[in-house]
Structures are given as structure tokens and as C-alpha cells.
Image (cartoon, rainbow, N blue to C red; front, side, top):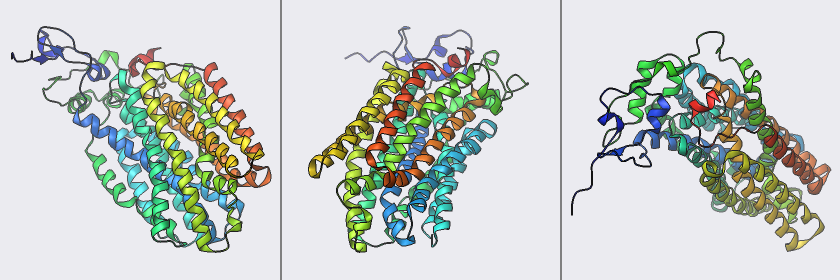
Length: 500
């Protein structure tokens, strides 16, 4: 059989070096030696490394934040917590995310994506170790806040480290693929909680739940030291030679293409001058204001439901089947109730994973805005279905709870939970991309903190039905705000988005 034709890159056949932008080099595909174009370019080892290291951060978020739902009954028992303190434990890590997304995530615009990417994981690891030694309620809350601080920084930084390293036509798929590991982490967290409770039933089991993540976190921190810096960010800082070197390292593959990287400096906007100062005020001026509203308000409305239901799903399930914690007559009863709720939580978390798979497959084809609007409407329908459980008893009551929450879990990850994260890292210029994504995440976590703190109080005061009605209304508002401020980013490069 004849050997297949050799492939080459456009730079191999060009008579003179071709000047391109960073994104054009990343989007470049090889061609056959006879000049026929191919349709795609294989991912490099460095691009895959960046992707899975960013995915690991989302995994840890799901693991820690949602595992708190399994740990909460044990924590509440050990420290004798009332409803307010119960809510504070659930809200502490979310409050940390709120602060960290802006205070630390925004630093990636000044110091680079890579340094913050490493430091945030080191902070996460330090507080993860500390939480296993918690002996007081105050110290526990501080540790949970510290974990959230690190995870908050990861919201914008992990997104940017992926989006500024991936081809434009598959950017959404890879970002949402990494984001999907939040759901994987939530599922693993519920599974770890169940196994520990099953094998070593004790009131202090919640410490071992958090301890299981320490060794993986140390490994991820070290591995993040080996990645490249963003060529987009380096160009925005005027560091063109370093950008060329890092872009070439990012795109190292066999056969090698491109063989050299020569950047078109005239096509790059730097942060010099007042016009591109890169301050937070830029988020609220000109066309950036619309982007800020689109990324922050729907995300806030979405987090009201996602985090409230995510953290307190075990409590709601236990309540729905008649196993409220006050009915537990011993630690053994409490652990048994917690195990039942953990299994229910794991089943619901499976739908989060299915939803994010569909989101990753459809985001670049259907578009972010359509999926976000449809997802918000679907969330409202799921919550409405769950609210019907109040009118039933026994198995029928449980069916409505599970069916509604499963619909909600699927639709939120197909739509707003995934798309708000994706859009926030795309619609802002390079010099304020970290700040824009960080502000959106922080604003969203105001909603998460509010619902995490108030959820147990409202659950006790007004009941499941009216609590779900409130979340139905916020979901529908999210759909309206998304459509009124829509900016579609599917198929456009980051450089094209800066000029539109």
C-alpha cells in the first residue's frame, strides 16, 4: 500500500515568516503536503495538561462544597449547632468563594494566570489540612472560609488558563468539560461520605471526609508549576518575546507545527495608557456594562437554587421521608439518616454529570444563550415538580422530590450553571478578563451565601413548598435577564470578541 501523504503546516510552505496573533497560532490547523486543509488540529500534551489541572480545581470545589452537605448533620451534632450556626457552616466556604473570586482571581490580570493558578491551590491545601484539626466551631468556619477563598480564585483563573490556551471552535467544549468535574466532585464527595460513615461510623467522621482530598491537592499544586503562561496575557503586558516562547511551548507536538511563532504586535492591545487601565471601573463602562450584567445577574439568580439545593439536599430528603435530625435518638440514628440522604444525593448528582455532558456537546453548536435560557426555564419546571411533593405522603412524596430535583440538576448543568461560568470568561477584554470573570463569580456567590445561610431557617419557617416557589421565580427572572442582555460567544475567538 502506498504511504499516506505527509502533512505540513502553513509555515512550512510559506516563503516568508507569517505574523499572527496568539489565537491564530492556537487555531492553526495542519495541511497536507499538496495544500489540502485538514479540519482540526490535535491537542498538544501541554494543552491537555492545562485542561486536566484546571478540571482538578473544579473537582475539588464539588468535592468540598457538596460534601459539606453530608458532613453537616455530624458537625451540627458535635458542636450543638442551632439553625443560624447550621446555616453559617454551609455558607462559610461560599463566602470565601465570594471574596476569593475578586480579591485573588482578579490578581491574575496583574501577576499572570500561572502564578495565581499555583498559589490558589497551595492555599486550598493548607486549609484542607487545617480543617482536619478543627476543635471549635469558630476554627471550623475559618477553615471553610479559607477553602472557599482558594476555590474562589480558581473560578476565573482556571477558566482563563483554559480559554486562552484552546482553539476557538472547541473552547466551549473544553471549558465545560473541565467545569463538569464539579459535578464529578459532588458525586465523589457523597460517595466518600457514605463509605466513611458505613465503615467507620463516628461523630467525627466529617474530618476524615475532608482529609481524603489532602494528598491529591498536594499533587495538583506541584503539577501546576509545570504549565505555560498565557500568551494572550503576556501580549497584553507587552511581553512579546516571552509570549512567543510560551506559545511555542504550548503548541509543541509531533510532527512539530508551528515550527516558529512570530507574533503580530500591531494586532495586540496592551494595558499601557489610561484607555486600557484595566481597573474594575472598566467593568461598568461602555459595552463592558452589558457584559457585566449578563455574566453576574443570571449567575447570582442561578446560584440561589443550585447551592441551596446542593448543600441541603440531604436535609431536604431526610425531611421528606420523615427522618429529620431531631428525631434521631442516638449518634447511630443520626449516621444512618445521613447515609440514606447521601445515597439520595449521589443519585441526584448523577444528573449533574449528564447535564454537563450535554452542555459540553451543545455549547459550541447551539450557542450559550439559548442553552442558558432553556436551562433556566427547565430549572423552574423541575422545582415546580418538586413542590408537588408537599401534597403527598410516603413513596409518592419521595418520587416528586427526586423527580423534581433530578430535572433541576440536569437542566441547571445543561444551562445556567454551566453557561454562566463559560460566558463570564469570554465576553471581557484580556486586560480585565480576570476581573470580569472574578466579579461575576463573586456577585453570584452573594446569592449562594444568602441561600446557604437562610435555607435551613426558611425551610423551618415557611416549609419546602414556598421555598421552592421563591426559587421558581428567581429561575424565570434569570431567563429574562439573560435574553435581554444576550451576547453570543460561540464560534468567535477571544480576539474577535474584543472587537465586537
